[in-house]
Length: 293
Image (cartoon, rainbow, N blue to C red):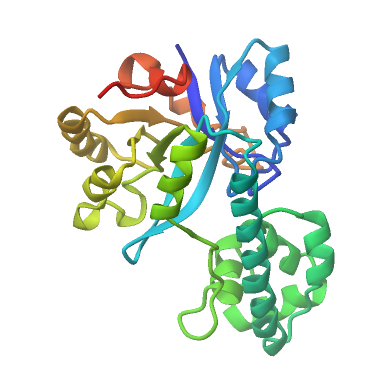
């Protein structure tokens, strides 16, 4: 069975609406999918309704910025209770903190001589403020473009260039993610249920220092095994850990948008197919089964 347990929509940093995303999943034969927007579940109802038209089973999902013992990483949380007041309050607190961080960044933008209207940006993105859309909003202003090109000495400026120059400089004020401590997440999971999965653990050297093993020991249920961010060697390194710990292993394309807006459109699942047969324990997510101890 073809599945995709990590896709993103315009409710966070994706570029397709939940409805358009559902249509795309249908075209590529996906039978089970999960919308995992960052720190937001605002698109879940639209996604569920659209997927139901195509016979796609949906799994409630979210990707949360997390921290544990001075390490940062992202967790995928499946099958939570979306109506739990404490859960919604926790997410809203990250939105508020993120806005504070972005507000501080506007001071840096002003120092660089760049224009930016934070109020208008929040109106367009009422949830968790996404980094990519923030960079786009800065670049959309013509006067900012010329100043950024001059500062970077570049004729063609990429999104990554804007992000590094405006939001994540080597020195000075940097944009922060509003992270939630793992202990708090584990405590809430006891109340509202679900499965916690480490998001693409091999990306950005997250496997360094046995982080995956430590998170599993703390109470996380498993990790993404199949991901376009993982090399063949990464997958082979993770397999023995899954077998040794009995971890749930999942897979997702981490789809945000087509890889290129020019020429032939390429989607993650054109070269990356995820099947349940290759993922031990994934049925506990798809069918929302608790692990039997």
